[in-house]
Amino acid sequence: MTSRRASQGLTLIELMIVVAIIGILASIAYPIYTNQVLSAQRTEAVVTLTDTAQRLERCYSQFSRYDHADCSVSDGDEIDSESGYYTVTVTVDDSTSFSLSAAPQTGRVKNDTTCGTYTLDHTGTRSQSGSGDPEDCW
Image (tube, rainbow, N blue to C red; front, side, top):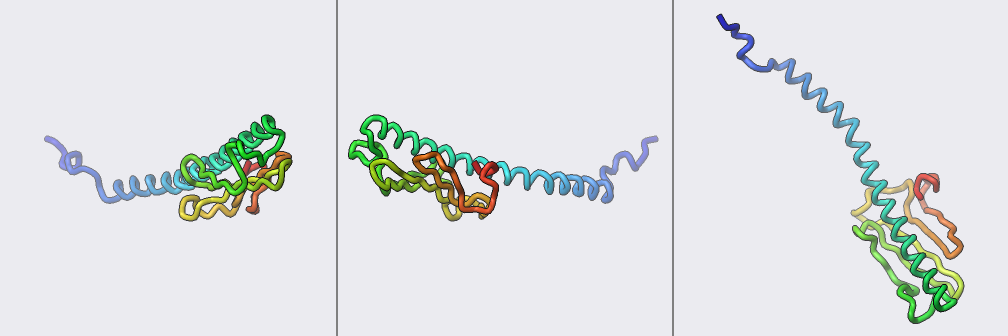
């Protein structure tokens, strides 16, 4: 004779244990996932800043000044990062200096108070407006 218990399926206790395990796994995985997303967004800011600085350096190599009319990047330009998480603003102070800032776009980057707005200048000095360690942000 076949046992009735074997054919009834899961008990409520067994189902609650499965739900609890899924909840524990989700509570561990979600913060890791959000940190990885934020890290990818920060990397996009650094890549866009570095690319823009390289374009300005090529201009300086070619014309011996950052503010030449034929440069691909000029004072006041705003360059969006590839996915639009950051906007890089170009400030060419004079023919021999520039500064770049990458500001997170409202609603696109979630409350990044750790790094905030990134800045990079013609000497390669890197900084950020947030309270985080520069080595962690850059």
